[in-house]
Length: 255
Image (tube, rainbow, N blue to C red):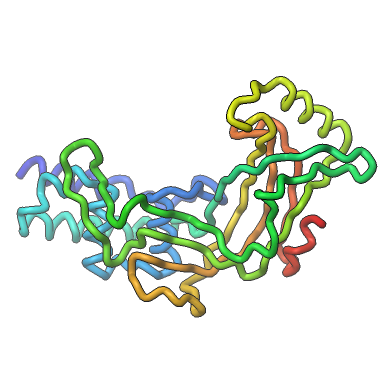
């Protein structure tokens, strides 16, 4: 019983509704929080809370999932924690990806983007895709897998406006710095010319146009706030930034 009380204190003891950053990086935890924030998951739904505990506190489920009384107390505590923390949950998510840069055109001042990586009227962005048709929260610990009915296995965002980008404008000094970085990298597995793309999204709510019929597949609507391109995952050199806040034409980002 003491351990259960300690677990209950742990769950409700750190419910500070404070947003740490404007955009939270995409992750299972942050995706869950965002879905609660926009009302697609609700703390009043026992199933959503049960799955939240199984996904994000799998050790508690392994220990108390077979004890109905203990699990009921944990569920109630987790529901209260989510309700208290909800103002601090972030519906703004940050999505990362990589693109391959082509040559730099000194005449136009632009880096070409590899043909396979061009954004051409992009309308959806993947936020989460579980490998397989189930969750295995406590991987490697002998935990049981389960198929969720409230949390999505596959989550994507449909942008409120399409987005196109075939090249990126970069001023000459920054381009020269990037070329030095590229030339200094070891050419392994075609990664020498890779750059990092960061998209900042504001999740709005359920997608009324979604044709998904399985609860494990979920689509939300989202506004694209900005796109940034860096030299790599360390983000030491910002090559390009385009803000779409207040600008409904995301196609204007690049030619």
